[in-house]
Image 1 (cartoon, rainbow, N blue to C red):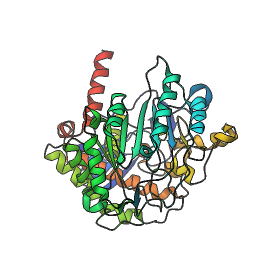
Image 2 (image 1 turned 90 degrees about the horizontal axis):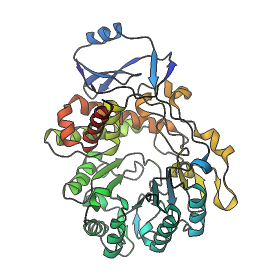
Image 3 (image 1 turned 60 degrees about the horizontal axis):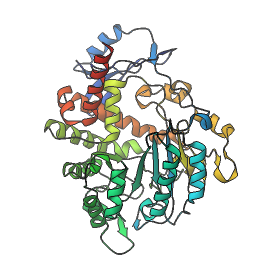
Image 4 (image 1 turned 45 degrees about the vertical axis):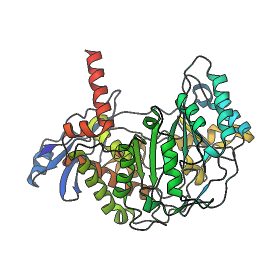
Length: 457
């Protein structure tokens, strides 16, 4: 047997809870068997079934040490660490899988009121602008930045991140945003042949528009602040265009060429409206595990191939699981939505996130008084040990919590389990030294731990 995560240790502070659930589970990781300690997240690659009994014989009492994320309720006094504004509006592309029709444009006066109420210079670190294409509304961006400058004074500016399809860029504007530390998330479906569902309203080739945009953004150190995001719709995507590994390789190739630094290949868009500006609440696919299992197996194999070849491997959802298995340990709550992050819809609605807003979960509206804490408080608690369904799940401390923003969280749970299996597969087939060489997030976390130990000693 081989210990897959020798560096794992439970973080402080601790809270102790008594669990009646099974402590160990054996996961079939596409041909390999991994024994996972459900409480500590320690993982062992098994060579024979007899090893299971040997480990269970040494099992400690069913207690678990987990971190506890306190609920943040005094939003007006404390402020949110992240604010996300949905600008709504029109888009210059017409993607077959995206929402249909145009959402109202967020008025700047509404955004200004939201900033005045929920932005805290000492706590708010990020401002996100999403919508159809925020770059179409340059005056809004200028006004937002000017208002922030007036508020922050001598305190460092929060990072402004724009989520958009990589179009409608101007060189002078990019130079200005780059100099001010803006970051970007660029929607890009994958390779050119998988971008045929995105059509420009002007009749131009959508891929060439996005690729030209990435070329314009290759200035100074801006690519280090660019994330490429590929979303997959199980409802309207073909089998070939849905392939996660193919998309990941296409986006990693763009990173290798110097266009960006991070990649997200998201399979959570399983509704009619996968755009980040709002996803439909009715999930149309139930057998997600059956549809996506082979895709995640191929994605994990692709990740291993890149690592074995000594090439950078980037895919944020898998990296998150790998980091949890290697470094973080059990965590009782992983979703900050509604606690220290706030979503402001294009109609002024206040919600924890885009999916929650699409599901009708709101905490009030800017135009009618703002935050209603009586609506917010019952929704906020995402602690795993308060959810009976989560406590029956073998990866409860790795997933951190199910999605509270959708009516059928089991669909998302299936995907989280596949992501966990993919991460364990990667650990089964790579070494720590190989991961340190090829995965930047693992290298950064490892170096941070070493630095912390040196400072404490």
